[in-house]
Length: 452
Ligand code: GAL
Image (cartoon, rainbow, N blue to C red; front, side, top):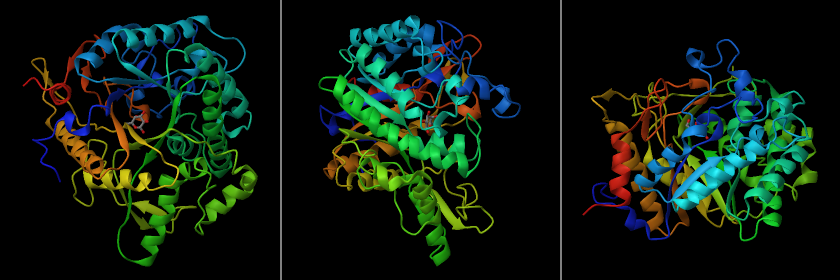
């Protein structure tokens, strides 16, 4: 691998997009301010034991009020792109029905501020914060979500489309359908295949429909959608482990990209996929699930090692955690493996129909310590250096990867982990809202705009 000491952003070429990403539910706070309706996360966080330490996303790092200061940080750190999401329940407090003018105005102010600072905005339309009113109607399990989402998308495109050209339709559909509708770890906390199978199909439909709407309404648009991916490594060469890894691979890496490319759902003899087809009569929708995205947003944090486990329903597989295998891992327990990141970029680029890849998220949580105004987050810095070196390897091999957005700007509400799992380049004191740039943030600043 390239010597990490020697790389600089210029090695990636002038048109490479360096950005940083946040999301509405994790950063904005102001949950009952400016006419915003409740999201599934507001309600879910009130359920006993769902979020670590009973944390709530109500205030978070208060991006709603502090966006100007935070955008200045983005600028100072040297990023060109700012990726954020629009809270559906700020635009449409009930998910459908009346438009909230204050919500519309907020994103205009945010976009205008980006443009003033010469930051390129990338809008994510859906980053997991479904309006609670829609969840009461079935949320992602209801086919009506296609109609609901289309209206939301149309409003956003008409409002912001002259100013913003870069759009990401969904953030990690596998993330919110599996965690939210299969295992109940995330909002809205639903469980089982009866929820998961329709949620998957509706999300696959929405991701394409959203793309079509933006294409029709926004001139010169650049449209993508963001997929999570994790290399799946079999625990042994035993046939059962290999087959188990293949089942997990279908779910983690193929379930959403393949329908978007017009390939329909992956099959490969996994019984769950037959159920998915049958449940949704999916063969009828192959065309509708396809959309010609301008770029694919790839989000990678870690690989997984998988072994056969007959007691796990449906998938009959379980993960052998990094700690157990005694390999380096982050505070989340996620294996640190930059070579695997490289392999996933390469693999996704090999699909016919993937025109361009942007890494729309990558980053790490390690326990931070603020000592005398300094967060010396050596491990996070090291993580970024290694992953960015792996990215450079891909770039040098002429793989069409054209951008990298770090996750994330400031410490924020990390879903069911609450506030303890800090991923930010900027430390936040959640009592005073004081921001302190971590050493990893300083490293980015130097990497992106070297002083010498
Ligand atoms: C992603 C998600 C982000 C962030 C990140 C770190 O899956 O899109 O919102 O939470 O993981 O866990």
